[in-house]
Length: 529
Image (tube, rainbow, N blue to C red; front, side, top):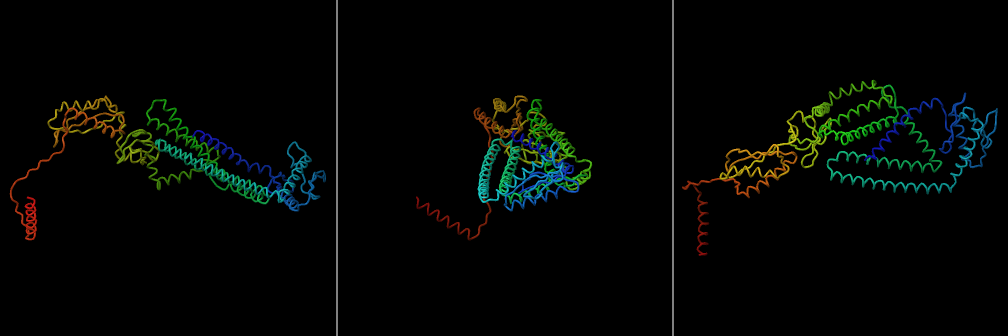
């Protein structure tokens, strides 16, 4: 997990650097306008703008001449001649390019630059002619097929590795229910990473195979230039400036990295720093949540400022958002305010055992919109925060560290209540879940229909285990009462029947049927005798 987060931080840092470089690229292009000399999609060098001659027309003329020379298939002779004190590169006796001082970098003569470019052109032309021969094409086809097969194998291997990782995460969810939330986030991250790696792999294969052939290399280069131009052009207005798609994507990546960093800081603060202070779990969670949202707010403002976005320019958007929250998002705003009240007022805390409506469970997470409760059946219930403020909530841990439970018990009328009380107190002495202070208490509730009604009151530290504790105590109480011959009553009802005749009138048909049945019964009895 830490390795993944470290790599994510590195990616975020590289994205920020890339975004800064991309933001400077248009400035560099304006200060030094140049145009590339290419052959079969490969860039050889760039020519500069001259007085009266733009850079792009110079490059277009040279590129067209090089393509005609290569397609002719004739032997090529490239040399440098001097015309009017300027070196000129000639290909098969035709002037290709005049080299000036503006084409040469600082510290290099124009003649040296011309010789360097001549060598590059000579090598590029010979390589282009070589790549158009049948032998090279067959070899390139074999290499391309091999690359596709290797890509298929790597795709399957990545899928199997990620499948094993997801299976391991599923087993962790079954064995460690409290780690479900971070595991699901990691699962989504792994799926996104797998899709990204597979896409990147096939893009690399496509670029490599298309670069093997001169014709497809030109097409791929044109497509790549078009995509880069589309992504790098400032087409998204935001405030007083316009931003490119790449810059917006990098900004989104930076915000995602900010969320990862703040979440890591929150986990470290909660598990390493606040644990040493001795505070309870609820106070630790409250401080960690406040620190998390504070870092997100400050980090967002800092990123937008470093990005060059004027925050005052989005005040209108903030106003519209506020109106939207007031009109269409009243429910979300209500839950948000309720979450802030719960976080700061702390009527419930993480780790508390609560009753909310029909649900009973332990508070696992408190956010600004909802609260997660894990029931005794290990089921996560997401409860809106407003329910904790608008309805009655029973918090078993709010007033102290122990909780009292009641166990109703009935004994027969003939029982000695002194012995019964002693037996019930003895039943709680050796049970470790019952605390000694406050001591257990037996209350005589009164006379019932079938026996004497009593109630055993005990104090426990774990209210979430109250049903299991009651069951264990009833087992112990039943054994002790039977051992001490204390009778446990059962429901009784007395039925009184008065003798006499009932004035019942029967129909003639029913009398005849009863007479036949009685006669058959008498005959059967006589035969048995």
